[in-house]
Every structure is written in C-alpha cells, then in structure tokens.
Length: 203
Image 1: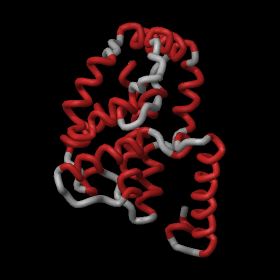
Image 2: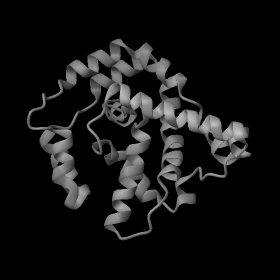
Image 3: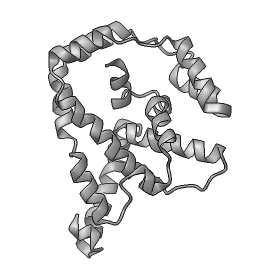
C-alpha cells in the first residue's frame, strides 16, 4: 500500500495487477459478483439518490471505499456471534414477503422502482425458500464466520484509505447520516444478490 500511496512504478504495477485480476475474475464467472458486493450497492444507492435530488455526483471509488469500511464493521460484528446465537436470531427473524418488499421498493426508489422490482423478483425466477435458507445459514455458520474473519478489519481499511488520501467516512463525502441509514436498509435491493446486508436482515 505504501508503494501505491507514493505512486511509485511498483505501486502502479500492483494497482493495475489488482484491477486486471478483478476484471478477469468477473469474466470467469460471467458477472460482477467477485468485485461487487454490498459496498457497491451502498455506493449505487447513494448515487441514485443524489441524481434524483440533482446533487453533485461523487467519485465511484471514493463512495465504494467509504462503504467498504461500513460493511467491514458488519463483518466484524458477525465474528462475535456464536452458532447458537445466530441460529436463535435466524429462527426469530421475520422475512418480509415479496409483496411487502415490492411496496418498500416503490416507496424508496421512485421512478426506478419497477426496474428494481424486476431485478429482485424476475418473472421467470424461483422464489427463495426463506426457512430453508435460514436453516442452511445456521448449518454453515462456521463458514460464514470464516468469511467474516477474512475481511480486513475496519481500522486496517481506514489506514489503507488514509494512506492514499481517500475519504473514510460518509461525512467526508458529504453523505448525510439519514442517507447512510436509508442505504443500510434499502441498498440490498440494488442487485438480486446475497450480501452481508441481506444476511443482516435475516439475523
């Protein structure tokens, strides 16, 4: 990271290698999932809201960096949740119906709502069995925690972002707390993709 921050030839080489490997990963699997999780969904949600409010656009990388710290905080919280605690939360958690979610999307996504609904509930798609999904998550909780432990700690991400003079908080971007809170609730609908945001809702 120091080499990248100092903009040395080695730093630029490592940066380009990372970007190329990210692109190759997406090509291999045929979609953006390897390089686009909940942090990107928050970024896209903020972008949608700013566009609808005719506010100044923010750099994509800056938004994703800040959102990555927010998501890392949530992964860190999972590490302290035992299998029994997770199973209990999953059993007690309420999963909104497709109808309820569609109505929520209409309330928050404005003119884009029908496209977002189609993304989340495709006409030829198969409805998710929420109870079966919960049972599988509980059964695989050790794997979930292993993934959570593999995510860099929020403090480490902040240090890396600060090293390259990037923003680390929504406030530094000009994203107000109300928009952050709304995105934590509703950005999961940006893509029909299982992320930490959807897991948190189940918990």
